[in-house]
Length: 343
Picture (spheres, rainbow, N blue to C red):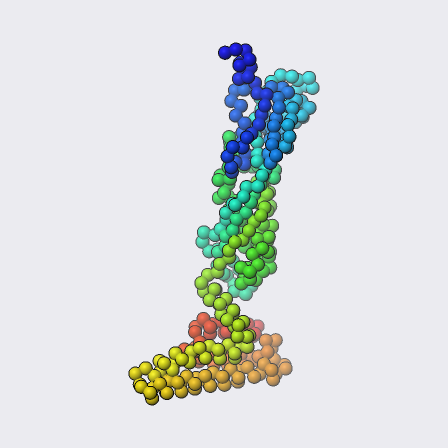
């Protein structure tokens, strides 16, 4: 081996990272037994930063550019090693590179429904998922808090931790957003913003910054989805309870008439149809009697009905449910709506 080859083997004059694979956040330059030549060149590309660490102590941090290494460009390292200004010998130091570009399409989601508190429904269960981007914001903090002396640290090493932080702050985001539970699916941008703000401090504690968080889907339990479908149906026929029950009764009349007339011929069919019409008349009279106080009484409760009128209406709705005109879910939804007016 010639003298030149020996010198090249022992001393390093160019330090750089080509970043050949995706998903690497931190990478330690492989010095082995070699030393850094005084006056060597440090190449830090765009979307990179380089950190010098001396015997476990964080020293100088370099941003993008080409840097000549000397006591002038390494003031912290110079102080740690007690070099004088005329120092010109090769030296040893650990050099870590960090990728500061956005790491895209990180996935998050609830593997199981999580329980949240809602002012309208109490304890409810929610599923949600989406994606987000993350980037290196503070290499010094990331080195001391996360990556340490490892040769490399990747996104895969952090994936579970970051996803856990997002799920941990999900309930905080719902509370901070002020969005009613049933409106979350229709306000995903606001929900995503609230979740991003809620989790940002936890990411910053690791030296990271969360960017571009999205909520791609919010889904409700089956029982709550049924209530939501009922509210949509009521909106289609109007918020008047009489109209709603009349609509339900009209839908049920053919079934009632058919069931009553099975096996009885023409007479049975006529009886079944008559029974259906009679039930419709009973329903209309009940709703009219139960709701007439809403417009006639000026000193009633804020909801428009007196307490005794509300209880009477609930009893009549219970009769309709017993006769098969209203389903259990429809009765429960209207009962809950009426009981709120007693508060």
